[in-house]
Structure formats: structure tokens, C-alpha cells
Amino acid sequence: MFEDESSPVESASEGFYMDISNENGNGGKIPFKKIFQKRKKSSERTRDKKQRQNRQLRKSMLPKNALMALNELKGINISDFTINSNPDGGFTAIVTVNSNQYQGKGLSKMSAKNLACEHALRDYIIAKMKPKPRKPKTSVEEAQPSTASEPMDTNSSDTESPEDELPMLNLASFAIYKLFSEWERDGYVVPEMHPSANAQPQQGDTNAAAPVVPKEPKKPPVRAELPPNWETMHPATLLCIMRPGIAYVDYGNAGDKPNVPQCLGVIVDNQEFTANGRSKKIARRNVAVNVCNTLFCTNFKYEEY
Image (cartoon, rainbow, N blue to C red):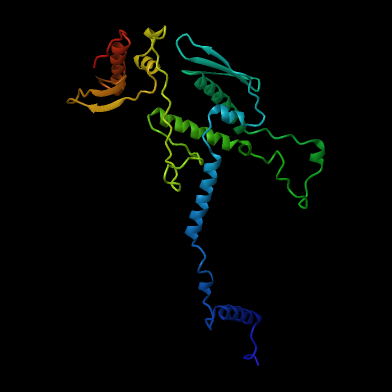
């Protein structure tokens, strides 16, 4: 009597397989693994998920300077900038953000404004990261102990961590901008993250898109006159003010031990200058002395090694 009876699960599964086999015309049951034959592997699904996340982040995390990142924050009031010229060159920008005054110095007005906004953004982020004091319980709340049946309020201010209020998107956009700016100062050309989609195709080829031409980095301003207090400056500092954005080249060391001088060089105004020193720091100073004495008619003295 038990041999003729079949369980509902077995009959349902057999009917399921028979329906599929009849539709496919195979005349038999389809193996279980072939049902999910078109399903992607776990590694492929993980890769596709990461690619989607990367595309979303690339669209939202655009490089933004400190002024743009600070201006997009809610509850931030930025006053008009006050720009003053420095006697030793450059500019000083003063701005008031939420009744706090910030100051920034730079070789250009824009760099001074961005530095002042960076100080304001720094203080705002650090203030958001500090833990907030818990609100003291009132006498009514202490007299009414919570019961197990009452649901926990997860949206109350006591359970929120300070990291929840951090403007991570603005902070990440500014961090990317600052990183790209450092690369450009080192002489590298950083293409735009989102090239213009309205680029005109070349003539004679309507299907081919025009090649994306990367922007050339802005050349830093070149000074013609020495600052009033140049005699009290370090030669490398003076060279950085007169010709900002230069990069020193390490030519290694030469000689036998124990006296192994270091050799550094730099190209300024299409001229190459080199100098030696017992350390790279001294060699860099001597290179700056060589450049300043030759191009700017200074009277710095070389440091012997």
C-alpha cells in the first residue's frame, strides 16, 4: 500500500520537471544544474557590482576646490573676500565663515582664496568629527523605565554617531582636487574625469568622435623683481617665489667614501644649473644659490662640503 503512494513534494517536483521537458521537447527531465545555466558566476556578479559602484562614484566625486566644496555645504555662510597685496609678493585673502575669520596667503588671488576656504573647511570637518555630549535625562524619563515591549528609537540624537553628519562627498571631492593639483605641480597632465560629450567629429568621418585633448596645466606666474626682504630668505625659498613650480633632478652621488657629494640640478628659464653638497639638502641649497646669483644678481654664498 505504501509503494503506490507518493509524497506531494515528489509529485510536485516531477510535474515541474515534466512541464519544462515538454516545452523544450527533450522528452525527459532537465538536470537541475541546467536550470541556472545562464546565471552568472559569483565572481562575475561581484565584478559587475563593483563596476556599477565605480561608475556611480565617478559621476558624484568630481574634483572641487575648497571654495566649491565649502559653498555646497548646508548651513555655511561665506562673506565677501578681502584681498590684500603682500609687500614681499603674493596676496592675502580674508573671509568670514559662520562668524569665524580665516586667512590664506598665495601667489595669486585665487590660491589665497582657496587656502582661506581650506582652513574653514578643515575646522568644519574636525568639528563634525568630535563626539557630541549626550542629553541628560529628565526626571520624567528617569521615573518611567523603558519596557521590553517599547521599540527602540534608532533615529534619536543619542544613537547618532558624529560620522553620520560628515559631508563625505564634499570632502572626497576636495581631496581628489588637491591630489590632482599636486600632480599638476609636479609637471604631469591630468585629463578631465568627464570629457565633453558634445565633441564634434572630424570632417569626413561622422562616426568617429574627436580625440580628447587634455588641458595644459596653468603656468605659474613669473616674477621680475626680487621681494624687499630677499636677503633674509633661504635661497631655495627665493627661487620658489621667483620661479614657482620648478622640479629638482637628482643626479646621484660622485666620488669615493667617506666624502661622497650629492649632485642636484634644475632647469630654469631654459638653462640647466647643477651643484654639489655633502647632503641632498645642502646640494639643493647650492643649486638655488647658483640660479639666484646667475639670474637674479643676488650675492648668496655657497655652503662648502
